[in-house]
Amino acid sequence: MIGALATTLCFAITPVFANQSAHRLGAAAANFWRLAVALLVLGVWAHSNGIGLGGPAFGWFFAGGLAGFGLGGFAMFQSLPRLGSSLSTLVVQCGSAVAASLLEWTWLGTGLSPLQLAAFVLTLTGVTVGLLPRSLPPFRRRNGASA
Image (cartoon, rainbow, N blue to C red; front, side, top):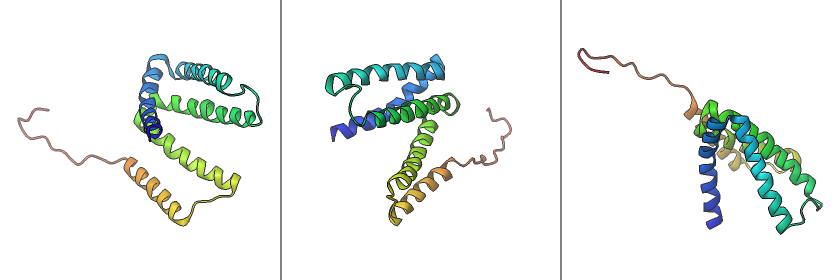
C-alpha cells in the first residue's frame, strides 16, 4: 500500500518539477540532465543490487529504457513548455494506455474484454469531451461597470 501511494505521489509531482526544469533550462537540456541522473542512479542500483550489464533480459531492459526514458521523455519535455504540466500529463497517460493495450494485443495476443474495452472507450471519450474547445457565453458589459 505504501509503495502504491509513493508511486502515485511521484507520478503526481514529476510533471510539475519537469515543467519547471523545462522552463528554466530548456526542454532539451532538462531532458538531458534527467537522463544523466537516471543513468547514474539506475547504474548504481544495477551494479550494487543486481548483475550490472549482464543477464538474459538486459537487451529488453535497454530497449524499454530507450523507448520510455528516451523517446517518451523527449516527447514529454517537448510538450511541457507548449501545453503545461497538467495537459501534458493527461496526454501522456491516455496515450500510454492506448499504446500499451495495442502493443499487448499485437505482441502477446491478449485483448481487452468487452467490459474493459467499453470502460476504455468511455474514459477516453470523457477526456476528449472535456478537452473540446468551448466558446464562452456572451457577456455584455453594463454601463458604469468596471472590468
